[in-house]
Image 1: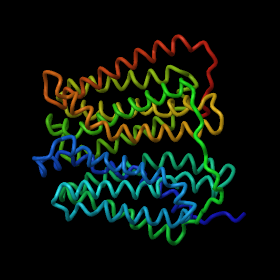
Image 2 (image 1 turned 120 degrees about the vertical axis):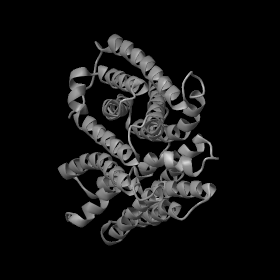
Image 3 (image 1 turned 90 degrees about the vertical axis):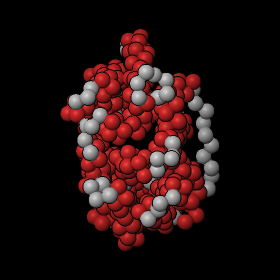
Length: 389
């Protein structure tokens, strides 16, 4: 079989580079709040997360759409829809239209994002496939970090200038037109979801809470930086970028850490995150606050791989597919509920809303640390599978 060209490989990997493109506007939440003072904070934060929920619609339809139109047309169409919807806010002054553009952005992302992994699996084989799948994971974190750095530069011009970053999607659509292979599955037999054991549902619930917590931190960090004068929008975006790189380091070192700590890896992630949030809750020092934010994302990023790894243990092939789908849905839905949950809980406490939210998050992380620590202690002597680094 002919080896795909370097341009084809670049086109496929570029889909991973922009997989988290919805979050590039996280750093301009304070500017959006000032631009639309009559809009509730929950709705402002939904501008960041609404695209994740709408992406679920086209994600669920993606297998049928791929059979109908082929992967190349779907990827190009999704990139172009996302590029247009993503850049539209440059011209928009109406909040309802702005929200609508974000929802349409999510629909486009749901069209192309599944093919970031799918095309690697279908086009490449052997060691090259394994290597590219590793690159895919790293590029996702690296791409988001680079986009956030660029956002930090653009916001100096204007908060609207940040939306220019979505023009990158149009460039990738052109690259896909020239080099992306077209895959069209022929199987028409539907895959029926397999029932899952009770332990899997516990892991799904924990996954939902885990991502609900990290969304709470990411959505409140911009307001925290503004209220405590930790730095301007550029500093915030650079901090968010560094947080993503911290997550990348955690992902690369997860295998080695798990070999030594086993089930305590999960407890470490929650304990370290709780400590970082307690520092953020208390400190008014900008340097300490930035370090705590970066450390939070680094240490907390050990929880995600562990939950994915544990969720697949002991399941059959069809059950693994079902569990993977459920995990994706749990993480996406958490993005929708995060603004609702944290802005409601933030009303309960003696301090400002953002500070109260951090207190609630620290409390939740502390409780989960204790629960997972007890679980790890009681079950550590049992059989434990290891992750190869």
